Length: 466
Image 1 (cartoon, rainbow, N blue to C red):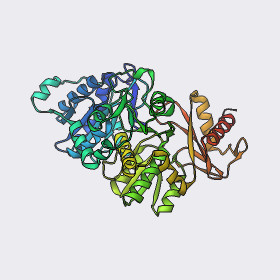
Image 2: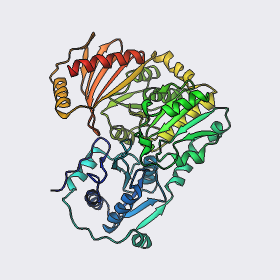
Image 3: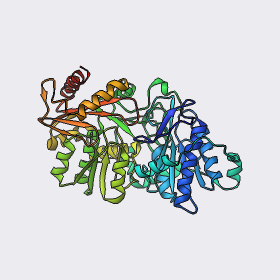
């Protein structure tokens, strides 16, 4: 029996040699090939890989299978970030982009993300259509990677150079390079490292080499995974630290005091900078788990706000069809106008460093400017590793309206767009949601301070776990 392959919130992921095998990869690529040939008489695609184990091997195999199906394939000279692949897919007018990555998952995993011709995540409709075309194991007759390259069916392309030119055209890099700011970048052993080495001077860089094991730390830009970067900022009295995840489509940041700057604050800073300082307009789009203070900021500036399900693909679909100034989600995936509708940790990080350089202001003082409008806020998250039985029981309890309070916090209103968000009054809330990509139950809480948000999370955990 062939294993059933499903695309979750952000693609298909599996444990290398257990679920993620060449055999299963062949099945997925064959399904993508069938879909492409239905849509275009002369289909083409861009495929790239991050710094994970087997990335080049898996990419070359995918390219061979696509080429055997008569599809023109653009491949990079070396590892490439997800935003690079998305950008190249759009600029080369390809019909699809593929990224061989498991994003922030532990090193045992690899994955397969599908991108659309617009240069961002494929729609849910597209991935479901591909899923339906995945068949059982079959023998494939392909030529070698070199043979297809010699025949011009696989084309080596400098995705990094294309992306760098776009960066140079969209940022005043001199304002950052010539400023007195002292900065640090943590590549997390991921695909963002090559770009930073070329665009910025005088930036301290750590974890900017190839290490498929990631030094034992999953390449997810959360505070708990960025202690070395935090210590560097504090000990060397730097102005800011920036980290990008394994495929560089998400980011985490630190201010000059070594305090972690959450994605909620980054989204708010982007709205503030792009609208107030740069005079840009457009809709704001955020995921269901994002801070409610973003709505407050949008109301202050007269900007419309769409709140969507979790998964950047939902934000992307709005960005394709409407004028969106900022689109982002809690996990650190954020996009802005002037770029492809794709999460991009490097692009967003440079935007905020440019904001600092242009104003001569610290990150914390710019956040204080936002607080003058929204009031102080903090959103905290706790990931609960639970057996399926317990996880499913909690979700059922949520569906059945069992939770009316969490400790001393009384529930005033419940929303269930994607998970269950319990509003507790005083602009506080807690949310419970099963992860779409990992065996986790995630809980989120917002309050005026981190300590109060953590207190709500603890009360919630005590209530749902009994």
